[in-house]
Structures are given as C-alpha cells and as structure tokens.
Image 1: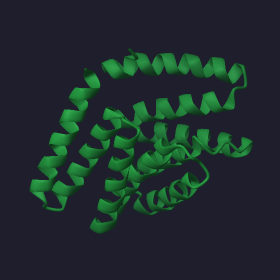
Image 2 (image 1 turned 45 degrees about the vertical axis):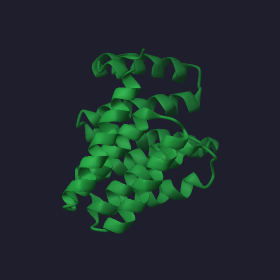
Image 3 (image 1 turned 90 degrees about the horizontal axis):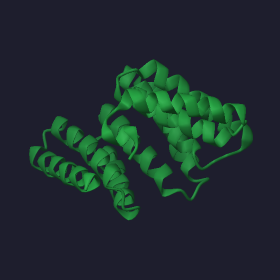
Length: 188
C-alpha cells in the first residue's frame, strides 16, 4: 500500500522526489511528469499551492514538448485548481478550458474525470450552478465507470461542498454520504 493511501504524505512526497530524480536522470519525461503530478496533488492537499502549481505547469510544459496527450489534461486541471485555490478565478477558468479541450485528444477517462471535477469547482466559484452540476455529474459518472471509489469519494465530496454553498442541503447530505461510503469502500 502506498504511503499516500496510508496518509503519510510527507513520506510519500520524499519517495516521489527521489523517484523524480531517478526518472529525470533516465530522461523519462512521461514518468517525470506523472511524478510531478502526484507530488503536486500532495502539495495542493497540504495547502502548498504555489509549489503545486509550479510542478503542474512544469510537467504540462514537458508533455507538450514531446506531444504526450494522455497525462496533459491532469496537469493542466491541477494548475487550474491551484489557481482557484489561490483565488485567481480568471486564470483558473482559462486553464480549465484548456484542460477540457485537451481531453478531446485522449481516450483516458481519468483525464476527463480530473478536468470535470475541477471544472465543477471553477464553475461554482464563478456562480454558474447549472454548469457546476453538469461537470460534477459527468465526473461522478466517469468515476463510477472506471470503478474508482477514491475518485467517487473525491468528486462527491467536492460536489457536496458546492451544493452546500448553494443552499441545497438535502443533495449536499446525499453527496457527503456518497463520499463517505466510497471512502469506506476504498479502504476495504
């Protein structure tokens, strides 16, 4: 089981940094970008937005240079989420538009899932409740399709927070329950 799944994010970050140095030495750009994405996700969860954003952007730049399209939407969506968390809604909207566009160049459902989850948050921050619901519903559909309880939990939790902010307590509670059940399922 990974250190990230056990909640030891500091140790997970240390191992990811070591692995990143190895993959950079081997000039494995895709794996380096994947590790940057993983490290940035950890940093973002710790509130270290600026560090996360630079990792997301550097990884996206690397992938763009070599023409890798599968992981690119993940990294751009991560950069959008970092901008949103920092309070820069305009930049977040620009980036999430790029991430959603980038999903058309890949058949990776997880790429669209990542972009849709963040797009839901960005739309909600912009006051577009209908668009937020649309993005979150699609992200949940994709998370269930790929059979990922962790992703179902994450999307449902973000969706619940938005629903709560919109004053839809009944639906928010249903999504919080969905997130909790999915999290429990992921741990089993």
